[in-house]
Length: 307
Ligand SMILES: [Zn+2]
Image (tube, rainbow, N blue to C red; front, side):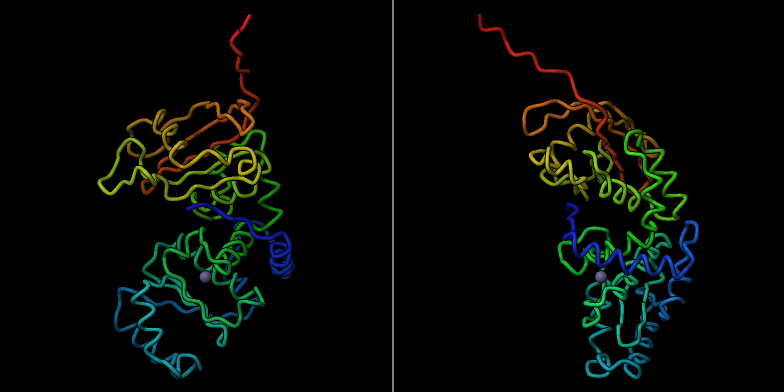
């Protein structure tokens, strides 16, 4: 799955909404407290557990009383939660966010941010949005989901506060780790956000362990997520997930978690020019996370002498 970029105007509109929130909170220091955002926007938060049948039933019952949409079709919500493994949802008529409490806290935080995102984008208010585990990840093909993900990222990384902390020329994985800690967000979302934002060629790859291949590994589709910065999309569009995974597998060690390795790699752009990137891979005990950032022009290829 690859990252997509919103149209500039849409991104600007959403940024305007997020700026209002940050201002409303008095531009606090990171990490942002989502309880404060909830209070500011007068949102209601409820938890449910997808592993607790009784709770879901009770919830469906309460909402049958409270929400019009649920009133009309009470079994809809119950079915949706169970069938699509909903991790979070937003009910616009109640201004209510609901989160599955059985998700790990760091994932709940992303889900929470994502649903706040739906709530602040005016044109999303006509939908009742349930989000399964798939759309809750920072990638989604659907427009509404991309917009809510963008809003979530801008809230959780606090716009300018994040941007001023990213130094493109010396960016490396320890900076991603430090940003993840400072903003209280997972390393995966931080890696995603950093690469998405960079104005130099860069990639982020989330994959299984490159040296400890699991049975369900698909060589044709080796990466869970392949994130590219805008300049990378322009200059290196011909490079695929498979190409990059092969490079990553080349330098990674067998160690189970922590740093798996790093290497300076030469990539050839669409005009045949070579460029040096620094690749670093880290295993967080769930996934292997790779950051690849442009460093400098590469060595010139010498044309064979024809005289
Ligand atoms: Zn959503």
